[in-house]
Image 1 (cartoon, rainbow, N blue to C red):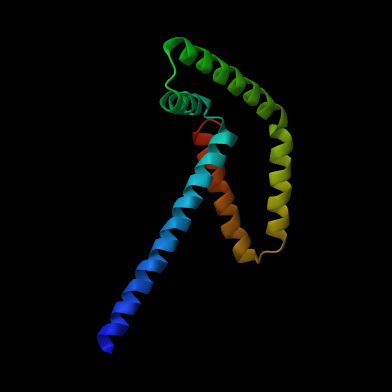
Image 2: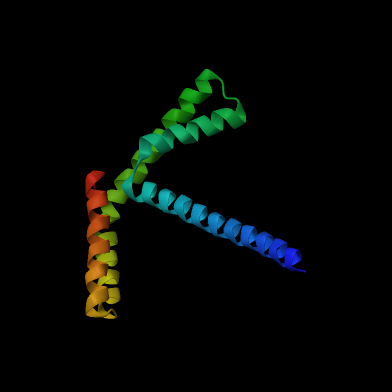
Length: 128
């Protein structure tokens, strides 16, 4: 009976660790994707899109050049739009941070300010 209990515990543990790993990996992926949209890492994104389409569609050289130009043009349009809405987006984020800060204890508020400062520093290092 004891061996069966250990085996069951082991299987459940592996299952739970698998779920946690999946959740963590998904979180990182979404965080990266959102970050790349916000920060505008267009070059990497453009290259990824063109490579994926080339791989799946087997584009010839002329098609690949045309797709690259179309994707680049689209990224530039998105970049221009992003710069227009950035001040509004930052204002919403700051308002949200103030709402969150208002419900925290003073100790939590200090930690929250550190989190925000670290995030801003990370964005600053990326040139934003």
